[in-house]
Length: 136
Ligand code: ZN
Image (cartoon, rainbow, N blue to C red; front, side, top):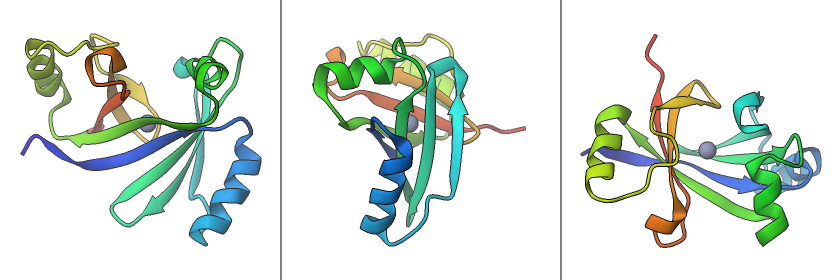
């Protein structure tokens, strides 16, 4: 199997401090980490849900993709991330299948991952993130 599991679901929020409180009540658990990803212009926080996670994302600046997303669609589910064993191989396979990769090279994402996004135009409107644990 090449895509192993849903690694996390990303949710765009306007105020991550308020949303951390809200999701804490919802899950009856604290987020276990907060991390900023400068390349994406976002602050993220993570909640563990068994084998997968929920990632909250707040824009750090108005030109962040998250700010643009919220402007267009409002807060809500932003992307679904799948764990892959070999991101480079999977990117090649998907590109050959006609999917549109947003980044042509794997890039650094939150949570010590290499990531690649697939354009929602090629995936029925769903922004898909591939992520692979960084091996170091
Ligand atoms: Zn993500």
